[in-house]
Image 1 (cartoon, rainbow over the protein chains, first blue to last red):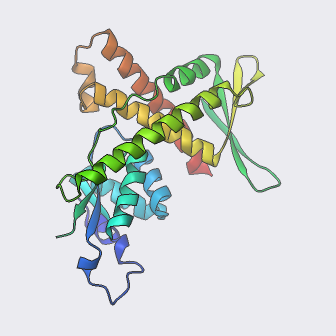
Image 2 (image 1 turned 90 degrees about the horizontal axis):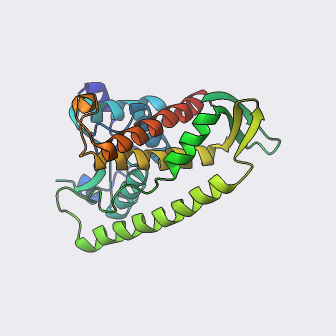
Length: 100
Length: 160
């Protein structure tokens, strides 16, 4: 998958308080590739759920499509759970995984 | 289905206006009638087992509740005479707010994913090579129909 997607694919960096280490965020929200969701639809959902600009959502969508998955955000348990609920509500294949 | 225009009301609320043929209206109504198709435990909250069983059960409960609400909303949507109106010979007018369009997109996608899951989650480019029974052909047709309408609604969002 493209490096550009990786570099853009770190929304969790934005607004992250400097006093908190990465382990405080605890969980990754991962979106997995499947062959059913239309690429434009996946992009649309990422824009709606994360309020991302189109190019950022597209970069993650392409990473999902080409690499098989994309880490969308890193966050605390409750927020990660919330995002996964929303993404699954839209039919995307999303899970939350402990951030090692 | 054709996206016609965006109409903005004095309140600032935007409406997407679509034109549909009679058969398209029938197909949309038929596809929505299949909701819900996807099983509750379609996908786990976590693949790595890093969340407790109680959290998975909570997600399942939320999914179950959401489906109940959506089914009710679909019935209201289809029974509302203002939703799809006869516009001209052979043409029907579908007017949706952005929120309604978002809702309809997610509902159609859930039906589409449900059909795909029923078919065994195949690679779509290999579907034509498969022999299918009547039931599978029906699921395939609904899946394609939902995709067709989704593309139409996504087009409207692109132009908004």
